[in-house]
Image (tube, rainbow, N blue to C red):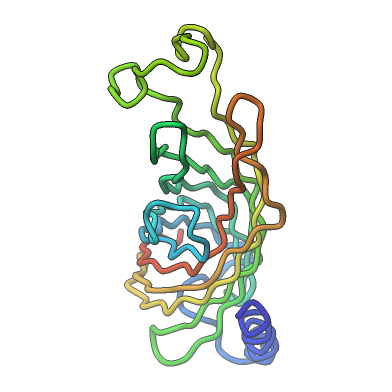
Length: 226
């Protein structure tokens, strides 16, 4: 699937290069010959590949700034987002679900191919650094009020955080269909994100599993071009 996404984006890139000599896309074409700025908001989710997550689909949101060269064909996106899956693991007394907050920050190269009047196809390829945080056990959760081995209260015997996950990084490819409502636009899109590394989840400094954020992306988007 990753190979298909990259091949599709390559074809789109070549087609967009040919489009540079034609009438520019209405979204970002500047009359002054200067770069065009914009921003967008994407709301959607990630259908995860791995079964380490309690939910097969996690919510996702992205906020970004766009810079387009005057023809409106090539651009740069930079921004951040939030994804919220739940990690599934086990302790001595059964299954536990710990909420994970993943904050991807990074940039993407963009290419836009006009399809018809006020309709374009936009491709994206980029990378993200992902800051990860995982919820520690809650004192209000009765599941964790049992005595551990040797008769010691786990929460008070181990005052530090005892479940943790390292940060990670992702690569992202996507395609979206855009409708021009100048100066705004609406879009629907999808793609794929895949891990460039897989950090361990640790319990009391002992690895208990890996984080894998790989999965199919789907979203709706809106934004403005100035």
